Image 1 (cartoon, rainbow, N blue to C red):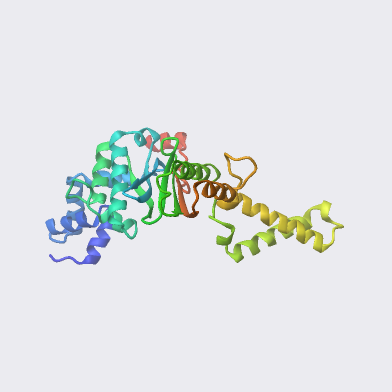
Image 2: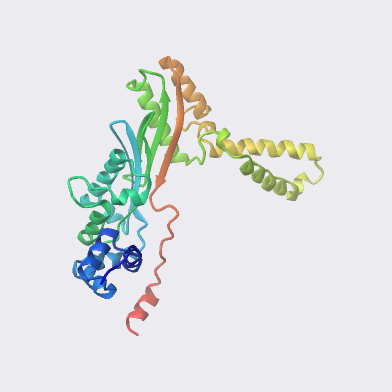
Length: 307
């Protein structure tokens, strides 16, 4: 019984198992979908799929530089305990290494890459780790910086991972002051969580929306009832400046400085080392951010078991 690419896709959607294993299952069962599912169960992949329905909101955000290539990746697990497991940590570091070396276009391409020291793909090894560890684990997202000078920072054992990427004048890469600057800025990003690199990166539509909100707030404030529009406009522009200071890395107050901005601190370091330093970009991952954790109702769970 023949099968098509659509059959492989359907089996993957039904089971959550990787494409290659779904293809093997259909080959082994002559295209019979039910037998293919049974084949996957026999191979232990169904157990991995059963666990894959569980929410993985713990894990680690890991950052590292490999031969000049900066990588930050988030790999999730169900519990903080597993996130400290050596098998899980090893898997995360190897995934980061593959990202650096193979430059996958997206998550799907990454999962199809060969795992270091194995003939298996990352997706297949991930499924194996689920069975070994006994929890759902999942590579969630990654970022890669191939050019420039990247500095990694991992906060609190993997709660936050940061890569900051800088453009430097020739010969500055090894200077202690530049290395310290990179670490300080990475720590700044971890602590202050800026949305933008610089105020010039904020789109006009975002600022216009912010002004609209601030205008409504100002006009609804009884203290501004008798103030003319031009005064209110000045107040709003001041608050827009505050928006930049809170949300843009270069305009933020430098956390280790004395009333100077990050931008000013970078200029001071650049002057001290006799070169140019610019921030190209950064990526900050915080483990589990944006994942809705399941709220367990213990009483309901017990009731469902005794029905």
